[in-house]
Image (cartoon, rainbow, N blue to C red; front, side, top):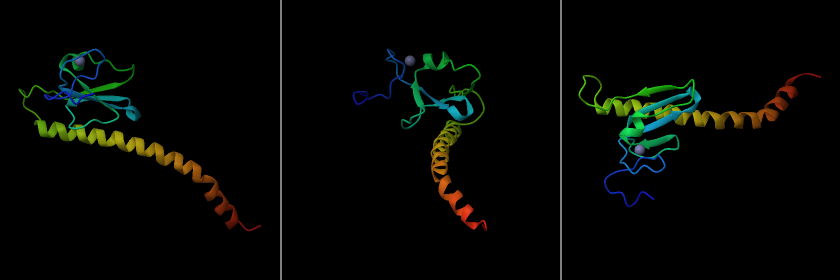
Length: 123
Ligand SMILES: [Zn+2]
């Protein structure tokens, strides 16, 4: 679907044909949306947005929005720093997914652990 685009990825909003200039990442575990530099590769929780849709971003009630400025005109973190922050945030999002999987595995293993405990109790 994206293979014909040679100038970059497009905005992920339906009906929008603009080139994406930023990436929106949802962190469901922390009810936070992060708008930052365009991600170098696609991820399950990340959506590419053009400048217009990035500006108009709306999130569910109670969610936080972290916007990483992209102007480059202000003193502050360099693009590399922002990219590192965005990567760190995405890493957290990835770990959240892994935690969910780990929890369900633990639950599945509970009967085995309980059996071992009962065996240790003198009757
Ligand atoms: Zn758009």
